[in-house]
Image (cartoon, rainbow, N blue to C red; front, side):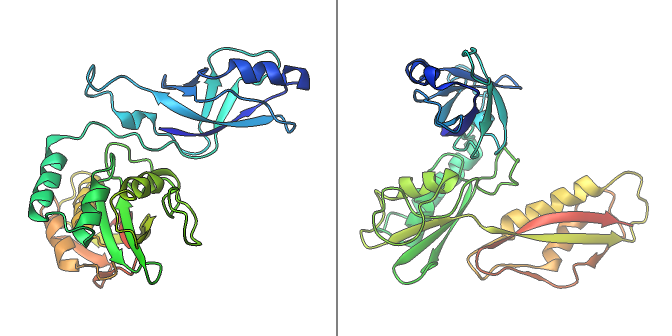
Length: 303
């Protein structure tokens, strides 16, 4: 897992060559104790900054299954500190792109689901289920959908989600949409972050005529208003939110034909303890999803 970090510096030009020789493998620290190393030597530019990819240093899952590769993920703007000081160089390091690609060890449940899908849909040389299974095989990817001709004739669209222990992005992939960096045809941008990992993983398997475009769904935020609960002895917001999120997780589909029915949401809320007598006053109609849209819970107001 590696992303670009920018190192602010007050370094004079006489230090540029020295810094270039010494910094490969240098350790930088996050405030919670997670460490990263610089992949390459760094030369400070004339503008006083430098860019370099870094890699998170984590405990091996063989030593600690709970260590979690997701611990190395971090959002844009994360500030780190150089482990060793360099004369004239600011010790502060700032994440310019999100650090992505870290995923915890797959648990038995998701593994079993993937295995059943693979047994039910044998490889067909590039069918829709093939693309779904190829994407799900990438670490950290938990849901995926294949859309024919998403970007026009000859294209195959792959929407991905990265639900898991790391919820900093509500399960949406961290990166930008696009093609594999191996793809040398087409005018579309190359993907970055999670989308790039999936595009690169699919590229060796895809049909030779396909132009595979990996994208993040677009969150469609839905607010809820609920009233009429007979005896509200505790704050039920968390329980109701969990029930709604489960419906969104199972019913959400960005392929363009997704519908989340109010009846399914009402049934989920009714199953939460303490909601007897509730009445959902908003939304008032089934939630329809356009191409690329995936429902995301907004605010839940209980009166």
